Image (cartoon, rainbow, N blue to C red; front, side):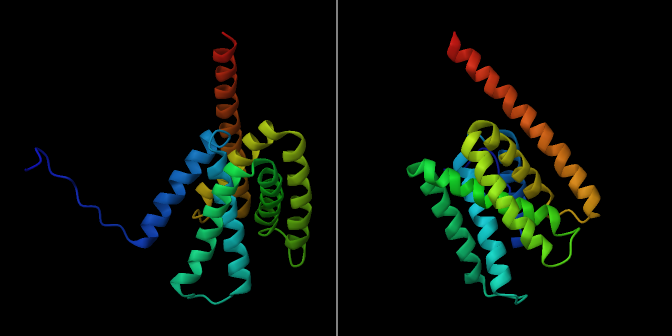
Length: 188
C-alpha cells in the first residue's frame, strides 16, 4: 500500500538532535513544569549527573557509554518521583538548588566560590521546596527550563542571566495562570 503523501526524511546530526531535545525539554519545563514534575526531576537528575561526570572525568572526548550515566540517573529520577514522591521532591529541591547555585555563580566567581554557592543553593532549594511545594515547583521548573533553553547560547554571562530571568518570569506567569484556571474549573 502506498501512502498518498511522501514522509520527509529527517537527517539530524547528534548535535542537532541534542539541541532539539534540549529545546523541547526546556519549553516543556518552562510552561508545564508543575504538571510534568516527573520531567523536572528527570532533567535535574540528568544535569547534576552530567556535572558530576564532567567533574570526575575531565577528559574532553569521553567514550559514548559514559554519557549513559546521566541518562540513567535522569530516568531513575523520573520513576522515583512518581513512586516515592515526598522523598524525591525534597531531594529534587536540594539538587535543583545546588545546580542553580553553581550555574548562576560559576561565570562570575573564582574557585572555590561556585562550589560554596552550590552548597548554599542546595540548602535553599531543599527548604523552599519543603515549605512551598507548588510555588517552588513552578519557580524552579521555570528557572530550569530557561537554563536548559539557554545552555547552548554563547553570550556574556550578564546577558544570559537577564534572559534566564525574563524567561523564568514568563514561565512562572504562564504556569500560575493555568493553575488559577484549573482551580476555577474544579470549584464549579
